[in-house]
Length: 65
Image (cartoon, rainbow, N blue to C red):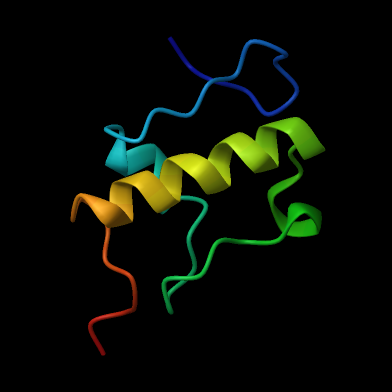
């Protein structure tokens, strides 16, 4: 099932690294709300999921460069 930005049931799972990487830039920073096009609630859920994935080493804190 595809997840769309305007879907009110959009849920970010910290284990879904492929989806989270779409919202993280080349330097490892979370993209701003203006660039992602998410609602404020979805952006907060995204931030929490990315931070959890970083904490358990599924995502890097910074880029590998």
